[in-house]
Image 1 (cartoon, one colour):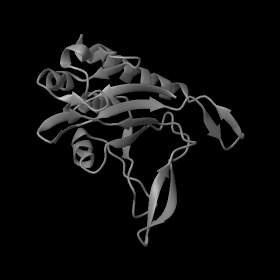
Image 2 (cartoon, one colour):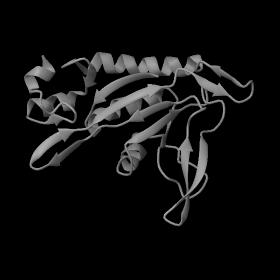
Image 3 (tube, one colour):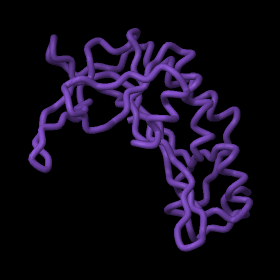
Length: 188
């Protein structure tokens, strides 16, 4: 899997989402649906509204999604619901971060963006690489991250912090999973 680790506030997510829309993507919230039909988001405003329900999204585009995301039916709490089964559909997965307060301390959740480097093609029954258009879209998002976010490598793992996440860390917020590190250690 090609993946970039991130720490973002919800505001830091907006430039990524906006660029995805500019590149022709729509976002699909990773939710439980009451019908076998998923929601398509095409504006930052709709994204913000949906963000209150989930922090996980699929970025899809007609240029690289060769068939719809697959919905699987399950029974949960005596109700039929549907979830997205994305094992065989080329898409970019985006997990947003977010700032939260617990015990009078601020924390920033980890986030990520990535895609599977191999997909099962049901037509020819072979593993195949993702479409070039998906990789181009991912690289454009990666370029935005590298040009406007801050790189950190406080141990063996590296990640990127959004501008507001950097400001929050400078003001005392802790990164989930890196609570023992000081702002100086994270941002040097």
